[in-house]
Structure formats: structure tokens, C-alpha cells
Amino acid sequence: MFFLFCISVYFLGISNASAFSSNYTKYISYSDFGRGEPLVLLHAFPTDKNLWLPQHQGLKQYFRVISLDLWGFGYSEGTTGSAVTMEEYADEVAQLLDQLSIKKAIIGGTSMGGYIALAFLAKYPDRVNGLILSNSQAITDSPEMKKSANSLASDVLTDGTQKFANDFINKALSAEAPQQIRLFLQNILLDQTPFGLASALRGMSIRQDFSNVLATTSIPMLIITSDKDTVIPPQQSANMHALAKNSKLVVISDAGHLSNLEQPEQWNKAVIELFGQKAQA
Image (cartoon, rainbow, N blue to C red; front, side, top):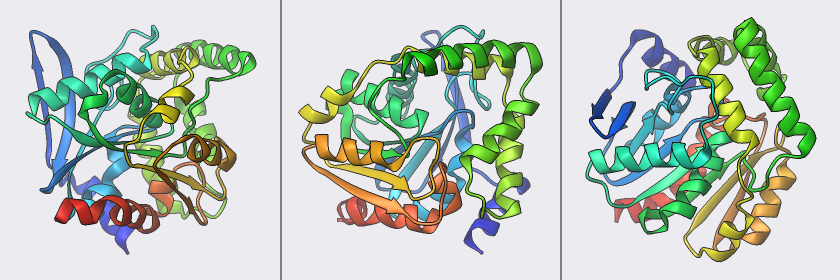
């Protein structure tokens, strides 16, 4: 029932979305829900801020929940297909925080969003109150995976996003995911442009290894994985947990790669249990 409510919010267009631009920044589209400690959520490739609708609704009584469309996705400024690095996406997050007059926040990301959260921590450590890394990893891709990502970027620019979207849904969701979740994700994916996907694919392929960032920070960290994630295996989350000084590892049951979408109640509960009490204090 909770997810059906979130879908109705999506299709009825009921949101708290805003956008801004200035002489110094590109156009950024974002959503801002609730009150309390700021929690900034960074979406997975190749989605947009709507991926976080179950968190907008489920966490807004505990946090000020902010999500944004990364450049090239959703309604934020487009890209050309050239690489956008994780550090450049991190700069986008910093610009949004500046615009909202937020000095520090909990930064959370899933999959690619986790890479960006780590890049943000590395570049702006004094602006991070806590970190959430969901279905993500700290290491770089293998040479084979980097080559595959660049090849896929070229294919998307040539052939469009339809086939890629269908393939991604089958990989990212568990076999048991309900049809309404599949349709919800499909609608998000088909809203994206080939240029945005290509930029992110090329940017991810050149990302750095953030293992040292994990090993040297003492900020509270929630590391989330799921038992049916075949995109980034749970062992990668276990490895991050072993490296981090102050982390909690949570395994979401009955979910694939997008655990926040398939099992939002479990995902939200994990966030509330680690960060929610502080937020309400």
C-alpha cells in the first residue's frame, strides 16, 4: 500500500519540486520535503530524483529530505555526452546546498549516487554529518568494465535508450518485483536522454578508488545492500563496512539492486534507526 501511494504521488504530479540557476551554476532541479536535519539523496544511474519518492514520503517526518536531478537527468541541465566526473556531480550537490543555505547534511546515494556521495565526502568533508551508501562500492571498475561502459555510451548515443532501459530493469530489479514497480521504473528510465546516460557512463568509468576515504573518516555511515543484488554484489558492501571506522551494515531482504524502491519500508527503517533519533532530538 505504501508503494502504491508513492506511485499515485508520481503520476498525479503531487510534489514539492523546485529549480534554480544563476550566473555561476547550471540549472538544478530538486525536491525538498519535511523539516529537521537535512538528508540529501543522490539517485542511481540512469534514473532521476523520482527514484526517491518512497523516501520523500517515508522519511519527511524525520528529516528535511532533499533530492536532486543530477546534471543530464530529469529536469536538471543537460549534458553533451562527454564524461561528467563524480567530482563534478559532487560540485552540483555543493551548489545546491549553498543555494539552500545548508552548511552540513547527511549525504546518501544509491549505486552511482553512492560514488558521488564518496566523492562529495572526499572533496567537502566538513559538509558531511553522515553518509549512506546503498548498493554501491568504493572501488573502481576493472579495465574490462571500463571498456564496456564506454562502448555502451556509444551505443546509447547511436540507438537511443529503449533497449537499454529494458535491459536495465531486468538487471536492477529482482525477479519477484511487482509489475507496478517495473512500470514505475520504466517511466523514469524513458524520461532520460542518451546524452545524460553517456555522460554518466563515461564519468563512472574514470572514477577513482575511494577506499582510502572510507578508511580515514570517522563520520557515522550506513551501508546498505540487498540479498538479490546482482549488479553490485553484497560482498562489496561488506568490504566497505570492514574498511570504515564507524559504520553499520544492513542487508535488505527480497530486493535487487534498487533496494530503496523494492523494499522502501526496510530501507527507510534502516535510515531512521541510525540517524532518525538524532534528527528528532
